[in-house]
Length: 275
Image (tube, rainbow, N blue to C red; front, side):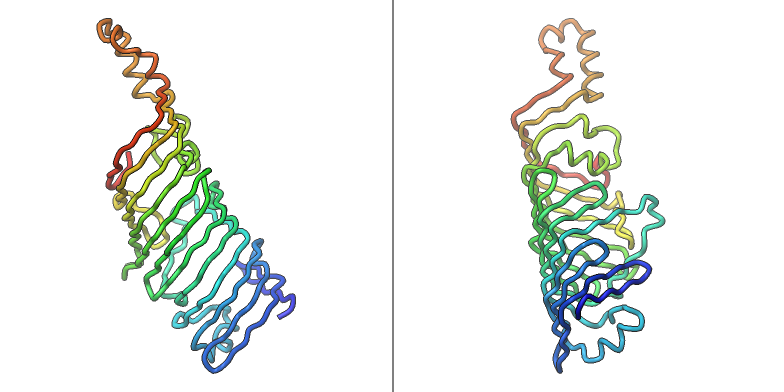
């Protein structure tokens, strides 16, 4: 392959170079190019694919009974979720080939969130995806995750796994995730560095939209060099204390406007809605 371009309504594949070598057992693939606006490189194999070319060229779709394995390197990838959840497309894992991929992604933009140096081992078999050793740099810190995603007969997803966060900027975390769709505690109230070791159990729709009534997260966490600023419930408490002459002489009520702490440790355990 030498400087080949392939386009359809959704994807633009340009400057495709490399080689595809079929033999009696597998197809060896060594290619690189530009997919949409991202440079990529793939080095791997597709086993048991004697009739692959005849089947995929007309519709540009991979038959789902086949498996793709190898190493995939992308320099950047952008994803923006649908503003209207009803517009999000349904995903059916059985429509896609099985995978055994080592992924390296230099830059990932997910809505307003910027992630660097993402790497992971991805295994897909039928309706199950296992994501192992997923490491990334984001929000001024690092994270490590292991996830298992299973799709039901109704095409909903159950996601189980573990997430390790190290030195995450908690202000940016709330800001980038739109305050987790709640109004009580917001990004402008918070400052500090979050470290946590969490277990996750999440159910989503067929379009991977999280169902808030089926969200469970638990585990220890610590916040260092933290601040809680202009938090409305504490401001109201402050006003009440000022009116109580006895308590106001024992408690320095000004400290409630801006609470500063070196470190807080606790265990997080919530189900369904976070707030």
